[in-house]
Length: 31
Image 1 (tube, helix red, strand yellow):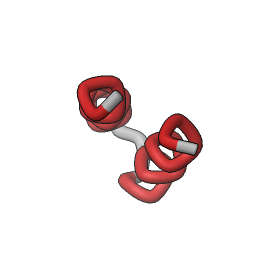
Image 2 (cartoon, rainbow, N blue to C red):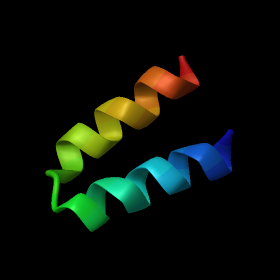
Image 3 (cartoon, rainbow, N blue to C red):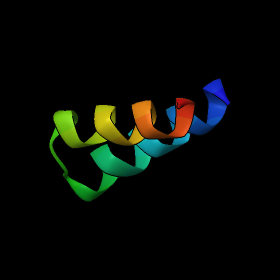
Image 4 (tube, rainbow, N blue to C red):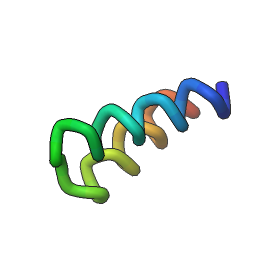
């Protein structure tokens, strides 16, 4: 799942989304 979080964070950066939003998505997936 760590890789999934990494991919999500990468997609967020690729789309120019805020890092806070990326972290929220990662936390949601980990939960």
